[in-house]
Image (cartoon, rainbow, N blue to C red):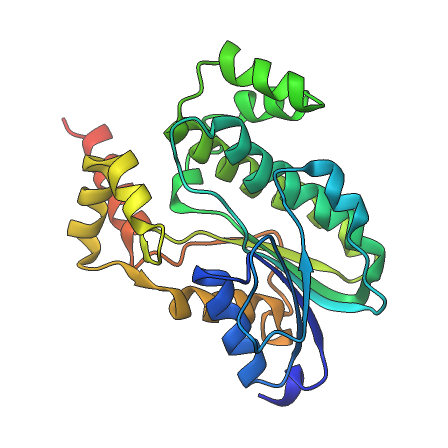
Length: 263
């Protein structure tokens, strides 16, 4: 695919996991890639901007001197005890703030792709809590929110991804005037260095998902979805949440539907 030759893509979280796989795929297709990550990315990255996304104020210091053809927000934290506020901060608030910070640099006709998750599937059901999350500002308020709403690590992760999916859909209309597209991708379990965190935190929920799909996804499989969504091949796709989860959502949705209509 020659489209990516000379195109500039920004990838957050490009030092490892899905982000690193996305970097590898983009470089193989000829793109120029800037990685935003606290950790050093593979040497194939053209540029590295070191940034700690738990520090929302640091996002304003991110400077790029040329336009962006696609922004792929792949950075994220898994559910870990004691990191509840940071999970919300990195997975959601940093994602939205960085996107807005870079928005004027995204070339007309460009694309934004956000990392969501199967964990965010209940965004409709939890719409009210997402709105309460959106109503807060500042780190102190976020810490208070976590305490007030009794947010444990799993709920923090789920909520962060629910918020990403909803925000992705809310941004469709504002971005349309510039011809910008925005989508989200929702993997289930993926074989990356943080898979163990999910297995520990989610327990039976994660085990059931793997039993249904037969295996965890591979980072490169998710990367192909992200790169597709960022490309002109997805030119009529915007505001969508693509379930790249080995069919897990389909089976769980059907199971729930059948249980609801028994009798």
